[in-house]
Length: 212
Length: 202
Image 1 (cartoon, rainbow over the protein chains, first blue to last red):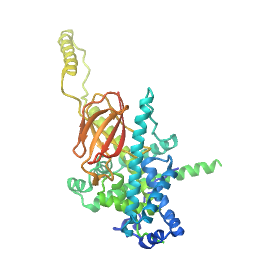
Image 2 (spheres, helix red, strand yellow):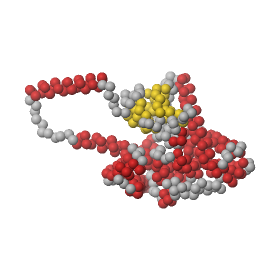
Image 3 (cartoon, chains in turn brown, purple):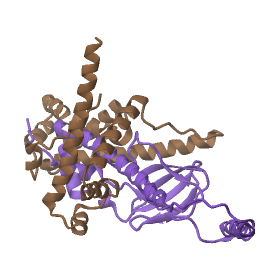
Image 4 (cartoon, each protein chain N blue to C red):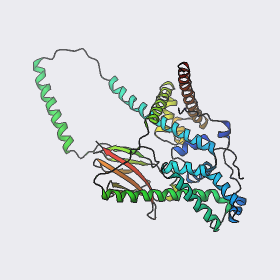
């Protein structure tokens, strides 16, 4: 069961700027044809690239896409196209984004070709599976409980931010809130959401244990 | 082996999910996500949380809008109407119904635009909108702030263009007939950047 566990850990909130690792030595080894450097590069990036591609394009042909991205990156490094080794991360991001754009383009063309051959329109059902739907509806019930139980002002902040997608500055200005008050309202609701989610799960675990 | 230090702030993750980060910050965050499994897990949790709060907010707003309408109905004692009063009331009611029907058919005033939120992330359901209402498109432009100016077009299921609009200003479209559509975003040099699914039904 997918339980919301959204605590704002001090570690997560304290770091403002994320320092980048030094890439020059790794890039130099790849340029020199060091096989272990390629393995290291793959080990570092494969999960992240997989995650990004899956979010943007779905799980279909994921292995092939990750492989294509790595081929492009390693060939570029070896041919000297990557002129600033310290910008390796940015380069990887650019390659992955290009791959996503190319895939969307290919999908559009394929769909155009398919529709001309068939009478009807075939559209994939993109709705979540029944288990996922059940989890979502339980989570929404928890969130509704929170919205019903909090003060009117706090509720307005949450609805403005999450539903109406108003910027924090606008909400603070129009509702006469400080940045700290705004953050506190959001983090309190998030913590409550996590607590209620955990309580729900523990009730279930207890129920299941009794009948085991 | 290169190593990373620190993690992304929770606020940044929320803004990323809501498409509110600048291109520079978006790039920083995505580059960090390539390496950091902790933040990838936190992003998935945050995405679920944001989607849940959005849905809960939508339901809460819908329920609370209906409540006052029921509350302002005045409670009056029931009185048997006299026959002489019933005749003019009936005529007035019939005239009102006729006027409403005529006005509905001949008026050029359209229903207010229906706001449709479109996202290009796979796995999400396509945007749905009712037919016979103008549409106000709200596109998820995450990661495209460096590709301005953008041009959008709406094509039907056969790929024929039915509308074209500049992206940036609020996109207001005329009502679309029932069917499946795709909203496409093109960059300044004409390259296709995004495609969103849109279903128009009754």
